[in-house]
Length: 281
Image (cartoon, rainbow, N blue to C red; front, side, top):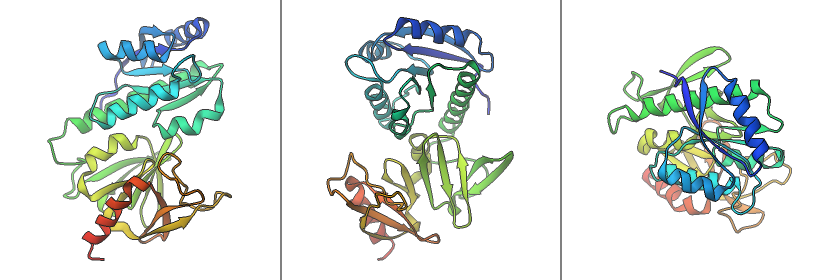
């Protein structure tokens, strides 16, 4: 897998001095290197530029006049879900309280101001690795899903210095957890880089998006029911505020083998029911 050695970057921040500092920091980054193609002082300016140009990465402030950075990231995510070739997003902001929402939008990273060069360099490397993985997936023949050698496909996971090959037939679900994904099998939980938006089109019909933060193997779904959401945080079935109007109750699925519950967006309830029906009950 070839990692890009040069990233094309759009800087988006309403403060000129902040953009100048970022540009200076980027000039000192070497692995990978980064080239600033343009700057924008608002999300609207950035959207106008992106309609006419392409880049690898948007370094994006959160709080700006008019549409904010989260709205721009949401628009780029929607574009990616429709099959568009959208850039990676790394938030650069002084407002740490937006981190959870940023990663729900599948941002590659979240940097706190003042940014350190070492931290920025690490974020650039993460972006380059993700772009390389996306390019490798897109290069596979249509319909093959994830490549890699076994009839049912496997997925490579780097775990504490080890490279593991996990057969997709063993995967119960993928779940977005802040900066990373959790891959769950019946015997282990592994942390991996990537995004659900990149994974979903390569996994084929065996996996179902039950929530904006979870892809579940259809064969692992054992039960669908209304599930009380714990305010103390011990319950897996956390409500999706964008989809649920049920207050303290929402839908959840029980996962075979581990007896865990995962939240289901209301818009996905019908699809989960269909998957259960396809298993013969």
